[in-house]
Length: 164
Image 1: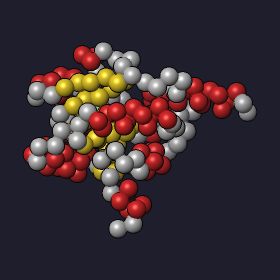
Image 2: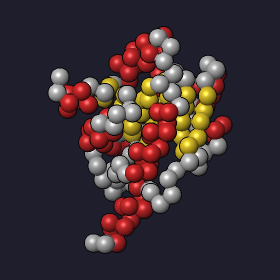
Image 3: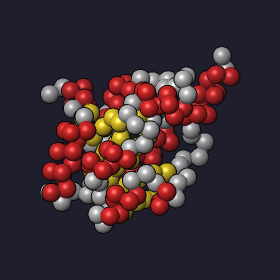
Image 4: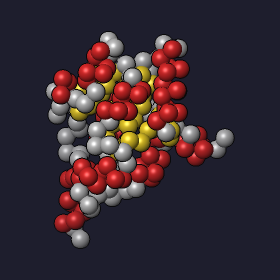
């Protein structure tokens, strides 16, 4: 299998991902889940995702589709299409699965996958994080991670716009 095929193989539809996650949990793996748009992948994302992986033995990333990003961020976004974002993220060694979701929140995906650990940025209170009820009901944990100062996709996009 080529390296690109190995990377592409980490990108799964929800049903496939659910089956894989169930097998991992059955084997005793601790599955961490996080989500986001990850429109322009930058250092802040890489550090955040690395820390998210440290919380479990497997890391599943729920990735907003292009339509979902447009609804959340506006018609000029995403800058990078969903498949390209998925490939870039799946190439990171600490991400085990990338799963698209088309809704505005990953709630249904979290319900389907039933991760052990739910991870978001520290700009959220744990109890306000989408999926908190699902994960804590099964005895799982909800964790927050501090963002890397000075790294924001919105800031990067604005900087590009003003330099044109």
